[in-house]
Length: 501
Image (cartoon, rainbow, N blue to C red; front, top):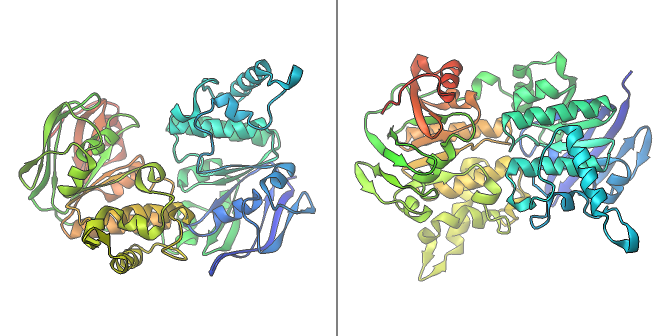
């Protein structure tokens, strides 16, 4: 019989005048996967950071295995068997994988020297146990995001905690890596470990979860067995509207005017890629991971070098060799990695929003701060960015709100063409719906939208037409009744179809 192992009672937390948690209570049973769900800014990550000793709660109690515990520091959390794998990676880039794993717990041999032989053998043993293969001597900063995520998980497992908190661990993982992670989670549960899991991917919640607690506006909506609810009911609890209302209505008809023409683009990855984007159209790009989709968007926005090919805007050939030239020609990119590619985390929300369009509010080489403040406030209201103050660091925002800042920054340039590379990865259903409505609204204003997404239902739900890529080539362009999961997968695997223009 499973017992409540961890209980939070009447937890409240405020940041300045912003109440992030209000009287939150829920319990987690031992040896289960307990999912926390809700929109970004709903309070999930705040709760987890309180459990991990990063934030101090203002009110309330925490009970572990029936005893009241104090968790005010990460060290106290660790002493109580609680460990957290953060959405933001914490590896030290200059150290090797094995050095990161054993940081501060290095086994010592004679004369106090690190016992490197023991380090290596334990790392290899751990990797074999959980089927995670990363070169132990690899420099962490040179690994892919997915490999770094797996190294973070190994670092936690090495310390053998009883409660493991996973904050959106799959956001940077490919399908096979997600399967590996879920196998790890199942193994841990079989060993009696307790998992607290945040995910915004509906299929993951129902595949891996046992129980779910839904948050909204800093409060608990409900806790339920996952077997007793369905996707539609979960979405309605989270955002107050049904699943069918998430995607906005598509355009009844897209005009014939060609806004963007891409002709025979070539690079190390791309092979003779040609297509057209019409004014007011949402054009999707689909395919299995690593087949040139990101490189295509980066090529159009000046970030991926081309060996051949031409790009036209409104029938005029344009030269795009860097991001500045792309912006000058009315092309804006919302990248997939908001922290590394989209934001300057040390700056304020206001400064980030204003970055790409500084010239519009500058005079004599000086920034007009009042105009910048007004622009930032208008953008924040238009995009519904939840914040306490525009002058707070952008890093203080939830993932979905950070992504809205990236979007607002690009919208400030008044683009003709907007490129979205996995824009809703790692954000909640409510924020996704906001993004979809903004995309469709901008398309209605005549902006051309290109949406690249690893979520096939997102591509189908949003796009007027869909380009499918395989090994750097376009294998087909689908629309109307042809736009199905089966047809996309066939083209994505190179099974059938010839490139259309």
